[in-house]
Length: 112
Image (cartoon, rainbow, N blue to C red; front, side):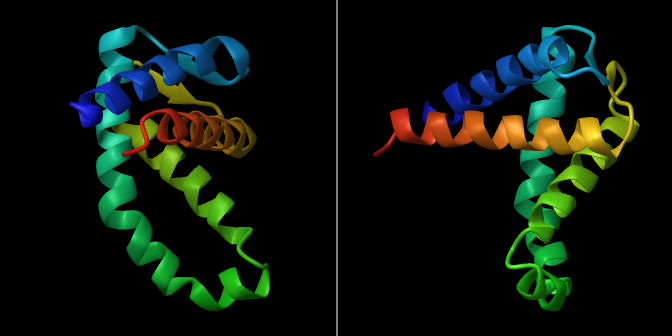
């Protein structure tokens, strides 16, 4: 049940981000839901591998390179989800920060 609530809140966050961040466009709630599902899968499967492969540069930048990885993954998902577009690196960067903030707040509220 908590997974569904988190997924719906992330979809709503994507919709809200399309109004708050210029360069981010989400067509409707269905598109936001699909994008949230795919972002969740990409963050669960591909992100750990990328972090492991870029571990030296991540350590060198004191972990700030993970923000770049998150931004690139947002751009990756936006490249093949119709109705979800991100126009460049900086909107993807701010979108990933916004989604992190929403996830942090969601995890705070839905704590076990």
